[in-house]
Image (tube, rainbow over the protein chains, first blue to last red):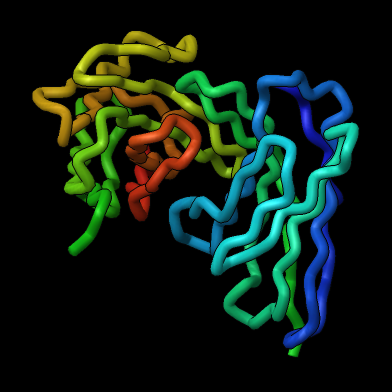
Length: 109
Length: 111
């Protein structure tokens, strides 16, 4: 699977949008971008995924650049409960979803 | 109505012992997984099973033996426990291979 690069950590203000970047410059045409998060002491939680088009669900929006070499996860109105480690994963659809180091996001009041 | 449940949540044991962690999912998924998260918080896949058949075995020592009696269960048995086995073990299941539902984890401490 293609490697991803994410900032180690970032802060955002409660109530504001949180924009989490991810670089995946070696992504292949058949690989998807997945986002998960892990709140402290809990199991990872699926957020969203996409191939080429931007995607939105009740949790977040995913913006993928036209060349697919980077993407941004947007939490539209961050709350304190969104404090977590966020993982950007490039996945080719086999049974091996691999997690990197992720971005530690701290939402501050 | 827990979707993916693991037992026990906490396990403290001595080196050399054998222990098991059980996992059950009530989502009707075909694929189940075991992940290990060590003290540095890296989450690594260990095994995945599809329809009770082993699909992925990520060079895990053969002291670790997964068993899937049916599609809803994937248990992890660990023989001759070592200090380095201390970690949080997560079970997960999926219908579509990228959307995994994880359990709450089982924290194993080997003394």
